Length: 203
Image 1 (cartoon, rainbow, N blue to C red):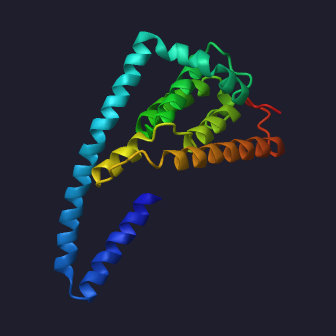
Image 2: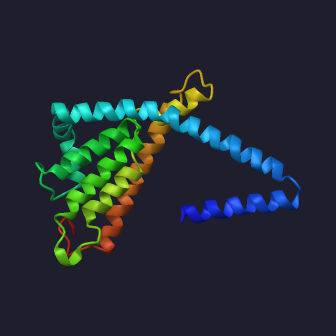
Image 3: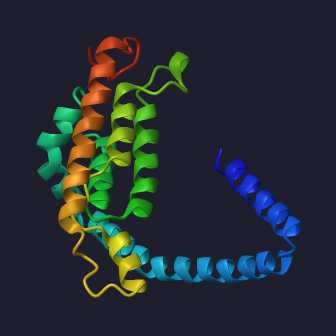
């Protein structure tokens, strides 16, 4: 969907630039903004590599298993029926931890790996249909709680903010509200439209 939106925007920019005789400005803007996009990507890469590396060290050292146990009261409440010793639950805990650190890019591959593990519990005839556990994970990953908004802080610092973390209270409150509403909505819809056939489909 986004590729079509971007394509339309590019076509409109070229069209209006040509109609107004400002194709030179369009070309200059394209070159300048492409350069800025690469610079931004490099800026974010450092922060992402740091925290992703720490997550990898935590996984190798066994810290993630301890984090999984620490988060187990929450994860078992949200993901009822899921084996507390399953690898999927460990990946879900790592996904939550990455989101708590504001590392959406690091959380995404962990979420995909968790979905892959959860999919193993889906009956063969129902492959390709999301179970309730999968739905809950997507909701939790999308509307995530952020204790340390690393990516936002990096961007604010890049663009001259002297106190890049002063938005932390607002982000914490808004993320708590978004997660609460999203989980309640997912649970309510599941009550009205339960997935009876799938493993993890709580009634």
